[in-house]
Length: 318
Ligand code: FAD
Image (cartoon, rainbow, N blue to C red):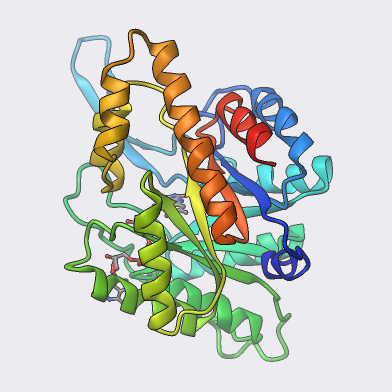
């Protein structure tokens, strides 16, 4: 079922959804299901599965020198989505990125997702590889999420890359796009970022999921600016509780966001990591309660492979 249909059918209720990561290569997929099982009590409308492009790693040789090898650390997005749909009867939303994909690769991936019975896709550009300063598209690949959304829209109209393919099977994907209440790191300003978001929506994105944020006022302002700009699709807030002290540094650096002073101060004053976790969870509960009052269609949680904090928050909110 399309995410937009879940949202249309929700009445006044706020829906629950969450994001998971495929296990690290060599990891045990059973741990993934163990993480999902406790969250099923909250009746998720959909579960997102991230996509991780290949990256260079250094592998040590016996003589002590290093080989630079390319590997994908977390493969398995498509098969995990297929299992989620079968095992839990919940819509799985694969993330699909531009980085590392030619348009032909993307087309083949879309065909696979269509065969597996996937209805929704979160269409993303992907980040720069660790060794690159800026994002570099694959030769013959989509340059940004907008291009990818166009490609999905084309396949929804039976338009494939090979123009000789006539009467090709029509897909029916519901595309979503990412958005940034505190601006994407590459964007020169918020106005420009929102203009590109509008173009993604005009190209076919039917819902938006935001980057995590810790200050609801940023989200409220963002929604208002989007609406003023004519972006009328559902905007789904992404929620992540702070669970370690170190995240005070890592989250702003990785995700280009601010942690409110009140929260950072409360965490700095915690006597141990357990207290940090409790503070982070309590903050997220209050954030979620306010977002529900605001009328958000869905609360979407970044579990980062750990479900306990999300379970605690969901228990307090739903
Ligand atoms: P785009 O929409 O392409 O935007 C990227 C930047 O370019 C922005 O600054 C934008 O303003 C600008 N821009 C947009 N369109 C144009 C244009 N036509 N011309 C010029 N500039 C333009 N990454 C992963 O690798 N795997 C994942 O599974 C994953 N999941 C994510 C889930 C969510 C909800 C979010 C918010 C992010 C996720 N990311 C993931 C990270 C994401 O890939 C990065 O934030 C990436 O840098 C940008 O992706 P985007 O789709 O927002 O890019």
